[in-house]
Length: 258
Image 1 (cartoon, helix red, strand yellow):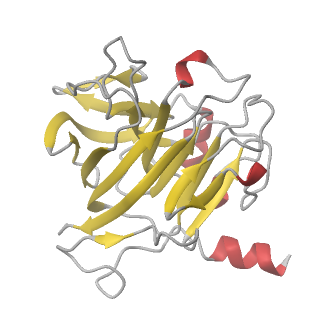
Image 2 (spheres, rainbow, N blue to C red):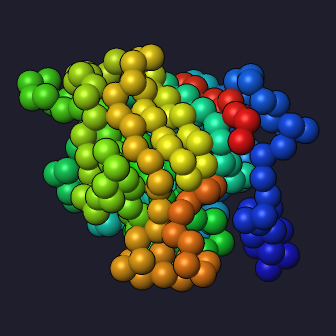
């Protein structure tokens, strides 16, 4: 019990990025290439901190989402959350898809992963909750033939404003090209609190939206909304595990001025 209390305290929602721990204007690695220090897993149906089937692991210095120890997926969605919430920052990841999708997974999850921004605090995630509330930078890989953009935006318990209008569409495609095979792709997100978020792929802007906010019709969001303000000013960064093996060789953040 003492260990669980310590774990929850270390993810207090009142923590913020500071110049003491992360300097403005410089890239800081969130993943050290050696272990999962600073990150905590959460899988559908399991308690916070349980790394189900050793899914999140380090292989040859790469943060790997592995399904080697799985027989079937069966809706056990996973997330790996970083310990500190952020508000104004740039996030940069280098990722690639490898291997085969685990049996029992939905077709849409083929070569599908994502980085969640402005996610809910780890201690607020329900044990059987499958979708982590937040705004997702959706990472997709091609099937070798069809067009399939990456760095799309998907929402879970949230909405965003596109071209001045609130949209409740779950996923909106970016203008990126398709990346087939096991090639490395660099995706960045520039986040300015609740003002705006912009996605980049290999240095090129591919999508921009504003005013990320809670969806008042969503049950999870309803429990997190404070008063009448729906805007998401800050939140946690999380990596998804949605059934297809994925590797990350870089996860970096740069703090921006508010």
